[in-house]
Amino acid sequence: MPTVNAVSCLLCFAFLVTVGDTSAAPPTGKRKPDASVSTAQPASYPRKLSSPHLTNPIQLHARVISGGVPEGDAAFRELAKLGVKTIITVDGAKPDTETALRHGLRYVHLPHGYDGISEARRTQLAKAVRDLDGPFYFHCHHGKHRSPAAASVACVGAGLMPPSNAASVLALAGTSQNYRGLHQSAATAVPLASEVLENLEVEFVSVATVDALAEAMVEVQRSYDHLQTIAAADWRSPESHPDLDPAHQALLLQEHFRELLRDNVVQKWPEAVMQMLTESAADARRLETRLREWHPKDRSESPPSVLSQIAKRIEANCQNCHQRFRDTPLSEK
Image (cartoon, rainbow, N blue to C red):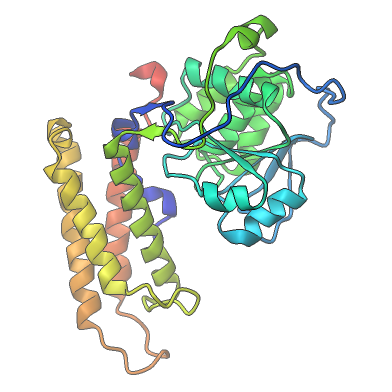
């Protein structure tokens, strides 16, 4: 079955993000870093952590952890027990601020794409870990690509980690070499002068204003995640998620692709991108049709092999699109 990241197609086109305030967030005044916190980096970092509720947790510093999106009360409760005070998400999806607040955690939303981290965002990330209440938990979707890069850039910029450790963080997290922009951002991270961070004016918000097209891509990702869960259950409604109807999820994925094709901005994208979207929409329709045609007698009946074949075509299309368009480093655009 395709990997989860294979369907966040074309996010570099869609991720036009501003740090606008769409929800109430406490103002951030300038404050001195906690003098009791040492910026010395022990040889034991970075290191993987064992966690029952968090995906791919990597500890970069005594006060900084990177991982996947926390889902449900158990995950947020675990973060609180770890002493985390502030969650920094670099994903485009709207964070679960309600559950976070219920567990005494603050959210800060500083999203960026797979093509790298801009200079402005690097400075904001470094200021966040220097000035806000820690410890911190950085997350993207699955904690493999964007969040370890962002956490590395933040730690190096704030002087919490030597630049030489950045590459090992991404290697430990399993960041794909295809995301050259993320690797470049980590490799070129440098400690920022204290006056630069001190003089930076930024309002850290819990939910940033994200371009509507980026939100559409988040919906594509969500539908595909559901299909992956269904595929792992032999293309049936999972016992852990019985509300997921396989054919309906394929239909939703198809409609998300079609909505993108109707978008005025998308229609100005390169012809090759449009072709890939068109093919993926057609394959999502084929997947829906095949799922509606399949009527297993019991749970022991194996699903038709064509279901996985169609899904693999969608994966291949998306990976091709990523490599050619989405993941081009910012330095090459």
